[in-house]
Image (cartoon, rainbow, N blue to C red):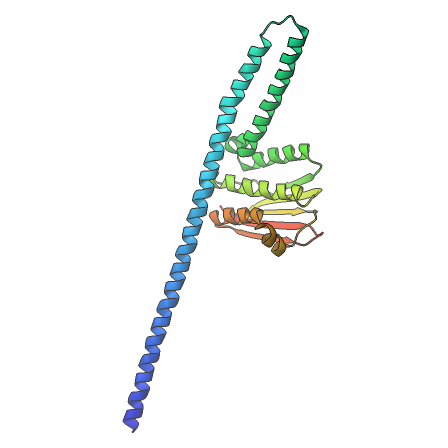
Length: 248
């Protein structure tokens, strides 16, 4: 009887071990699948954003290098027309003003697509230029604090700039902020960025449910590409705090 009990116990133990091995195998398989899925998602997001930035760069180049000079040439030819009729001259002058407005709009669109300063002088100068441009067009006051000189790889600059661009636009357009505080620091081989506004704030869960949280999703997608960390804190009528850290 003792022998039978011992054999029964051994059989139960073997079955339990086999079940444990099977469970561990399935858990490892699920973890591997999840990691593979995350990597594929990250690669897909990276490909989409890279393609988007390349298309923006191409369109910005076409606007700046092709359409702009072409319109300037049209205006120059118009101004060289010798007319004696006062009405005709007024029409030409009016058309010239319209062309100036179109050229100005094209430059603005080209800048929004890809600031030349970002490529020429780097993130810091591009950010200063962007802030001056925003403050010139809006009543918001943006306080920029550069705690030390920063060095960011070219392939990362565009993503960091786009994130700050998105945050600042959201604060002005949706939160009606009057003051924004932007702090940038480099510490322990990480770029650290803080943005605080005094706007209306928002309920994050309701915002995501109502609109899909496209702005937040864009920030999250870019921070994934940069292998960084993002934190957003906001409450209605209490403003919004953003913090993100990116390894350099």
